[in-house]
Amino acid sequence: MRKKNLKIFLILTFFCFLILPLSQILAQVDTLPPATPTEVRAGDTPNDNGHSITVTWKLSADDGAGRKDVVAYEILRSESPAGEFVVRGMVPAGNNTYQDRGAKEKEDKNYFPPHHDFYYKVRAKTLKSYSESEVAGPATAYGQWFHIGKLPVFVGTLAFTIMVLTFIGLARKGKELYVRPLAGIDAVDDAIGRATEMGRPILYILGLGTAADIATIASLTILNRIAKKTAEHKTKIIVPCMDPIVMSVAQETVKAGYLDAGRPDMYQEENIFYITSMQFAYVAAVNGIMLREKTATNFYLGKFYAESLILAETGSVAGSIQISGTDEIAQIPFFVAATDFTLIGEELYAASAYLGREPLLLGALKAQDLAKAIVMISLALGAFAASFHLDFFLRLFSVQM
Amino acid sequence: MRRQLPILIVFVSGIFMIIQYFIPHESFEFIYEYAMDWIIIIGIFAMLLGLWSLTRASVSKVQTKAPGWGYSVMTLAGLVAMIFLGVYKGNQSIAEGTSFMDIFWNIYTPIQATMFALLAFYIASAAYRAFRARTVMSTILLVTALVIMLRLIPLGPLSGINQTLASWILTVPNMAAKRAIWIGIGLGATATCLKIIFGIERAYMGKD
Image 1 (spheres, chains in turn orange, yellow):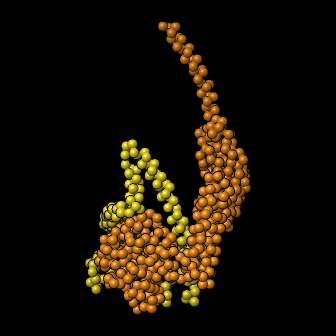
Image 2: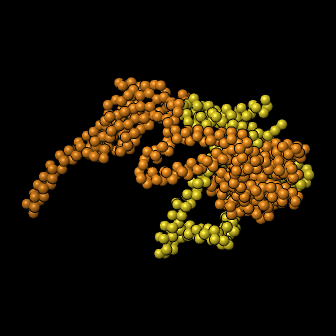
Image 3: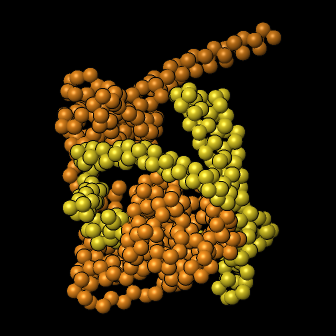
């Protein structure tokens, strides 16, 4: 028994002597600093407002390789190479870029001054240790006067502007421009005529957009043409608005339509009124108007969201002829299902030119058609280039925001 | 001059907005933000116009006893009550437990939710009309809609096939159509902007 106890004692002692130094060695390994990040570069962030510097580095040899114990990188900044470096940010292991971005307001704590020299260090961190790179810099942030990443957009916009102006110039010279008929637009005259025959008013909804939305502006231009027609037919038009600015513009627009028709005396400002800026409260009020006034024709042209179907279905129940149009793709199916005619997407923007039939406005439509043809050809070429790995062609259209 | 000045303002503002999109420099950022602040300020003043319009329309309906004038009485009562409760306690009025917030949470919010909930029934009635298989096109629409709707329901051995088909419909023909509409919208919106900036489209400006 004694011998057995002695054996156990000896084995335990042996293991203690073996484990103790091993744990010490392991502890030392754990606290060993990782290999330092190298090739640290700091420079102005391109295409920005001048309050950011981008730091890049080569990963530590222990990041994803070697001892594989690097867990993160800290980025430190100082105003002089020997000055006090402060931590500006941290990125997880495997990343080799950091954008040191600050506020542009001087009173902000995180203000990042432009045109000021800064020095950077990158610290590779393990759980218990770290190592620091050489100091990089000086780097200075400055704002750019052109966003190179948006060059394709710039070229496209410029080309499209030239096309629009060219076609408008042709129209001005009296060139006959053909535009394909749109069922929704052709129905406008019939819809107004129906309201006149029935002696009931027309309801025009500008949608939920503000005066800053292009769809609302397009709708306002259509409203002008429709107001002119209603004035000619001596039919009442009701325009309930959800935005007070839109209401003010709509009042002027309708007034201009009545003036164009030579019937300014018939214009009634109280028919273009504000209801509320709350979505469903507005819907409830408009539904009430439809059912009480028994409107013969309803126009829904502009920006619409979830209320589109509620409005259109109520109009359908009220027996009104309905013409809709929006650039909100999610709402187009609802309008197609619930209204008689729908202007899909761009047709909303084209409607004003169709109704006005002014050559200058039709010129812009022809430019749109040409641009669409160019887009279609580009898409076909793009599909071909992508299939055959012709990257240079794809890069021509690459946009960075 | 009364006609030219607004057109000039629109032209200068429009060209600036186009240019600033391509210039990230902070001086342009500053002017852009300044313009955005002005939009907010104008919006606040325009709200007074809106209130005046609403009050005038409602009072007129009550005076003439127009059909549904009782609703206008409710509108005016609600307007006056909320303005009073909002102004009476100043900033404190939007704290929880105040009459202002109680009315908002217990009357306005449920009414708004009720209106939104109506959408479900309207979707059903609109779907019934849209999916009536009277022509070849509407039959295709009906079948496509069925495939898309059934993708979320377990169909035993057919589930895999149905999901693959639904996924293809959503990512290929559906996405192609959506992108085509988006491209058209982009060009249409740009053309509209150009027409307004260059003073070709002036219908929104009104006349004297």
